[in-house]
Image (cartoon, rainbow, N blue to C red; front, side):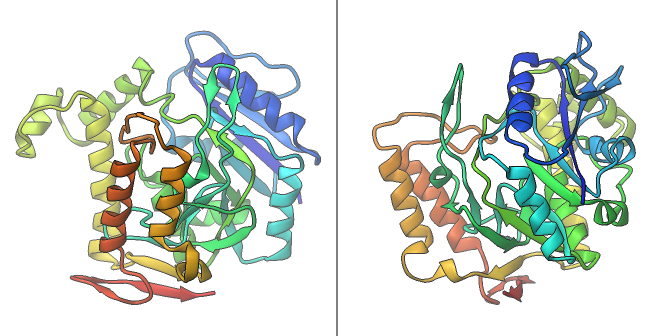
Amino acid sequence: MKLSTIIACINQFPMTEEAIALVKENSVTDNEIIVIDNGSDNQFQFAGVKIVRNEINIGTYPIYKQGLDVSSGDVIAFLHNDLFVWEKGWDKRVLDLFESNPKVGLVGFVWSTSMDVDGGRGTGTAGNFQGRQWKEWCGTLAELHGRRMSRNERAVVVDGLSMIFRKEALEAIGFVEDMPPHHFYDKLMSCQTIEKGWEVWGIGIECDHISYQTSGTQDKYTMLIKEWAKKYLDIDNCQEYCKREHIGSSPIDGWDFICYREAERRFLKEYRDNKHFIPLSISPAWQSGEHTAAAVMKTASIKIAGLQQTRSRHTLITHPARQESIAFRSARSLPLLGVSASPHRCKVFQT
């Protein structure tokens, strides 16, 4: 099998260059690396990789369709440009997983064994973030997000920071025309993959994700959301949307808020309200013994004791007490092992 790796960027060239260099340095197979310059102010250049230039920014979700068209691999890895891959031979490990199990359709570096009634990952989140400092960038420890896991595990959803598809599976799930260009695409595509009869897996590759580097910093991203909202919602400003939706005032990140809310609305309407596909859960061994949500959050609190970092909606870094409250709120709402979550009932896969 052959691997193609797609990394999209809009500006942020220094970070993108570091991400590409690490992917290349730590690859041991003939990995086809393709950079999609998604409407940067200046054309991106990097020796030894294929570069595809978009004159205008098309968003995140449409990159998956474009990546399918421009790549030649049997397996296509879509990695964020702020994802630093530390593990030597990560590419071979990914290919080994696909080759060993023909049912695997989607793999990710951060995943969850559950998806709750609101589309969240609940207490099943796992990954292998290292929390390394790299030049001016700093990662976060896996324990801040859930469980640390270096092995492979059956999952129901993977995080969009790394979505690695069997080409056949990506072709099978297709693309939703009116889906917002960012947010909830990872949950949508994870559910679509399972719905089509493929399996979703997590793979504990050593890596770090910086997070919130495009939607929070790029004006072209905001312009894209405005154009999408005009086309599909027929609105010209955030205040108009808030009035229509009976929201008291426009939030600070108004256009990104609209994008997130509409992506969430579309996903939940289809997979919760219409198809009753979620909540969904794998029955994992870690739910017993020391791997309870309480134990995981206790570990995370110890790791970050004394830190006074703030948490945005996009980056799960917070004061220990607040972290714990978030975890237990999720644990209370998450229907595990077939327990009903009125009015929706959780489907459970046994592994």
